[in-house]
Image 1 (cartoon, rainbow, N blue to C red):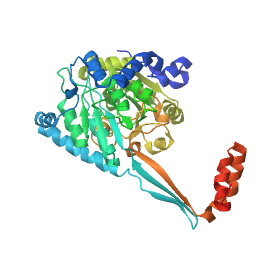
Image 2 (image 1 turned 90 degrees about the vertical axis):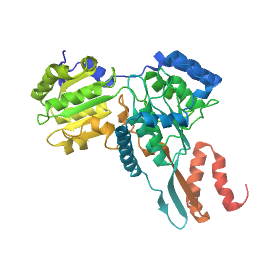
Image 3 (image 1 turned 180 degrees about the horizontal axis):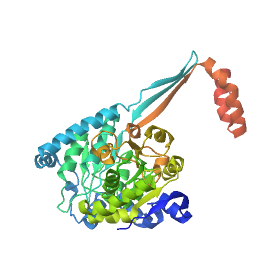
Image 4 (image 1 turned 90 degrees about the horizontal axis):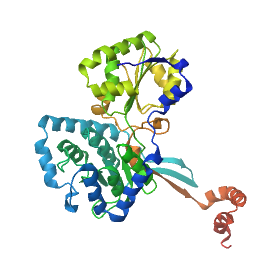
Length: 432
């Protein structure tokens, strides 16, 4: 296995842009097939869901089988090991605790004798959550999506997840969805699931917003139904960037790079260091140690999408971090607080040798549904805010309105909207 060590200041422009741009969705490459399925679901409802589930998942369903039954939930609890159920329950408690503390309070922005401005928060009525399945199952994601929605006060949480070849949903996912508070669960995945949640079918209700990660087809489908419904953010293959200096442990670093690479063949793992000596130590661990303990597919992903970069100093490293805007950022250095204060763009920052992404993904209670592909430059990870709408409430007395009468008149005149001024004037003259 060959993994080059590259100096940031010597990167060719093309090489630099290739790293920064990594996995980007080419909408045009997928538009035709995604639009075809979405339009079919909009027009034919359940019939289209059944057709595409057979084509893409190899599962023949009837309309009655789309929805997961109460009996299936009970069976899922019986089939899931008790120690795993306990872990789910404890993890759910931590996720709930963290997200309850995120809840914003209604507040008075301004209050005087003649003017009142308030901001209140209302939950979205209904949310669709998408739980991917295929090479792996993600009960942790089921908890991460359902619990914040319910904490925010969403009345109806509708979950869609692809069935296995036998037509069943993995029992661990069903248990997690039930613990999280999902109100309805459907065995349908892919583009067709996004279409069902966006448009509604005879069986699956239309929702107000869709959240959750998926493959490129799911991601493009979410982007294409935006406007019909809200979405969280486009989420592509997972990524990790580690900033580490000479004080870090090379084996820990190599393992953390590998742990993200095992998610997906398109996962990105990048080390950036101010020490070339440390970079070489990490490379030796990847080349000599990892082949003994990780799968060949993980090594291939690291070789294909992994990078080891050396920066001249912390400033150059942080400039690159902010340009890349990683989903996960680990900082292992002598003075991590300084570096954290300089980072503007990252989905989540974990600090120190004993805060690997794996513990963040599963155990702490913070949300692991995070922006990828550079979206961390304009979007945060999933929080209760994704399920809430701030609403402004405004109240003026006649005396308060009089203060702003001239302002409205001038804007109305310059923008050619004369009735705006008249709607204020009539309140003082009583006539047009």
